[in-house]
Image 1 (spheres, rainbow, N blue to C red):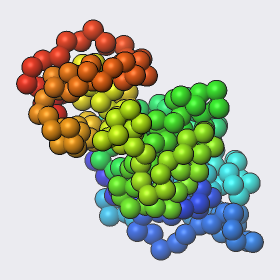
Image 2: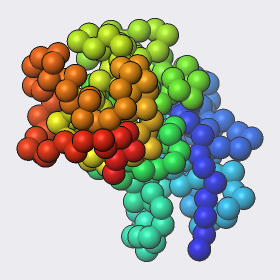
Image 3: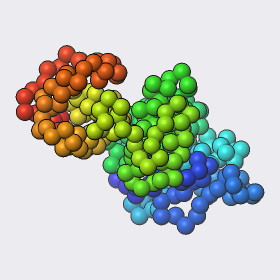
Image 4: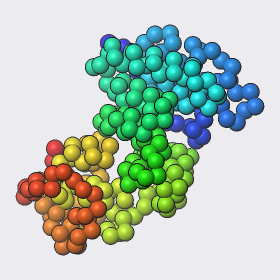
Length: 283
């Protein structure tokens, strides 16, 4: 089975593509004669020479960044060929981890389709590469129209958290700009605090909002486009901040604090009962 090395995060500007470990950086918006405007797509496409080896500095997830670069360079046909190549490969290797999500991400960028971008983000929810997930969440949030800001903002805030946790400050700054366009003013130094729960960040609040109504870690992960591990990590932080040890205690606090947490985000499984003593790692 062919494996791939993890991809690094997107560079500071959306028009730049950097392959992890590669020695070249392709700029398509800054340089007067950008390499992506000249180089044959066969030299840029991670899949042009066939499946990647485990030691390759490239990754299948790099196709999304390449798609963006080629579109910015005025080469939509080459961008389409790179996306189609990845989609064909994904169709032949359906058991390859996260390959379908990478193909969906590239297709979403090519077509400017927010719903495909949301599918990509969902498919990457358990991807162990937080910066790859963050890029998918960011693009999904960016592509969603203003009329769907309620969907876009949580995606962008989750991407911001991932970038901030990884120390990718230029990426985080870019997402803060996207949030400001949506009318959200995140703190410059990190994720916002939740207004109704000042002990918590917005991301922790989003997790609590679902857990307090009985959602499992996996259900929260699917709803917020996170990995179950990230949800568990948020809950550990929440439990420590609130001085509690169980989900039942969390539900009690949520009830005591009143209605806002129970009204903000509709959840389909509100009737799920809480189990006494179930902790942060509940599946």
